[in-house]
Length: 280
Image (cartoon, rainbow, N blue to C red):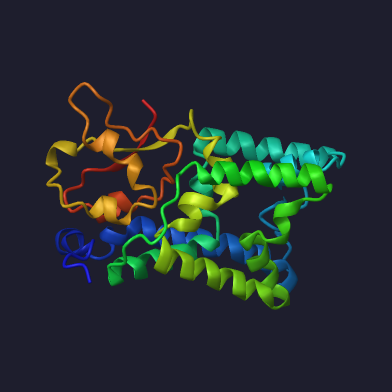
């Protein structure tokens, strides 16, 4: 077990609510969006139809996951105009906001992987596997090649997000096995293994992030005491160091395309080192 549990000092200094503010807002966002998708089939309230891979909001606003579109094109399927428009809407929205905001604020599987990461920290588990951060991009490329060779949208057969949504409506079946496998993988083999090293959807959204406006800024870095709590809870801890540990001439803005803008570093820091900011 780790002697230090991240967050205790932040709770003592700021109170529990402020030390978990962005986490709570993320959970409301994730569950609220999932609820909107389920409200139609379960309650007959059709605000959103479809899944997070492809949907229509309020009967006129299409949204299509870019990875789904690329697979469809690779498979040789003609692109419907609504799917093209939906892809453009998603690409523009996340390119302006921040691509991996999807992972932290929308994706329901994040609930599973966050829980696994928490358990991993509490148990003090060490890495059993060692993967490169580039693995997710190779996985994404392999999916596109498989779609090209098979003429099918390959990833939808094992996309945990789609399986979770459909499972909540029609029964999980083998979907439970996949989600359990992801949980065990992250909890006991590699912390944040799925989201941080393998997920092709996260890889795709990270490619939309380089010029995004929303960023986390460590403009209070002179107050840092090296408690390491932010590194312990960050889903992509490698993105923090350049902004936090740079010299006076370097930017204090986290510019990495893999930052999720989840706000956990803001919550967990007892000295208010971090805050959300614009890319300036």
